[in-house]
Length: 354
View 1 (tube, helix red, strand yellow):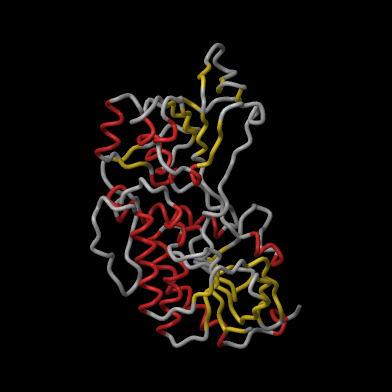
View 2 (cartoon, one colour):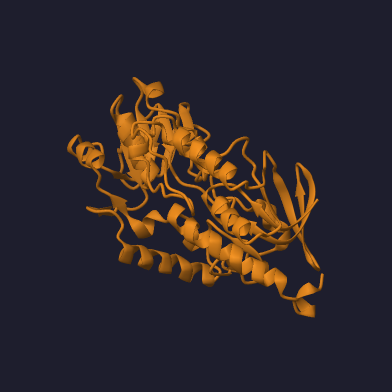
């Protein structure tokens, strides 16, 4: 099977790029690993309401659906993405797992669960959801209680009567912490002191944050934590939780014990725990790109915008400065147009060498 362009992933980034490819009349296909539409949104916890969800933006050429604000965000956004795929007749194949991408003289060969695909260009939009990050801490194997990642969280009710330690300083950590604190006791720990914003992230601050991330990826460094740049917004729910003492954060512990967490630098500090919720973020899901040997000495992938410097026939959308819904909206169409120009231009002989 062949397509001039293969888009890997049908989340916000992938659909934004597919929209531009459709408008350009390109020969393309979208390979998505999920069983249904919705990207990462379809996996969000059921109690995350639409009006509490962070950063939902309309896809290019459409508007967000007029839905009940109390509806589960996962259901609304998944339905919205499904309608978008139908409206623009986007050629999405699912579920298709892309196992490996190999470079050839005139493009790529993709090893997938659907068989082999060849392409002249690849637009990777696999996001991070399938790669939850579990940090290594001494004693994790000793803890007798339950450990789960934020990606596995389904709602607060299951924690009734248990003490939950929430680890992480991102938006999801705060949202889940607040929900859980309404039904049981909690402790919040973070590596850094949280930085709070009284208002949403403005346009000027947004540009500055993107510039910092862009600087890192251009230098071939990992993008870093988004929240370390953007900070956390003081919503009404946050202010109410702060008044209840829920957001009285502790520095992250040194180790886990059989029945809790302990700090070595503060003798005697110990918090009993029944559950440890690791809201510790995600890493870019790009193991399938390993055969391309893109990572440099700095541990990241050197980028120019969305284009991989070492491989101009490959663009990464939803990585680095475009790793947000609004960032993906802007970057997806731009990446699609640039990639189409690249594969339409004969490459130098040295670049076609295998």
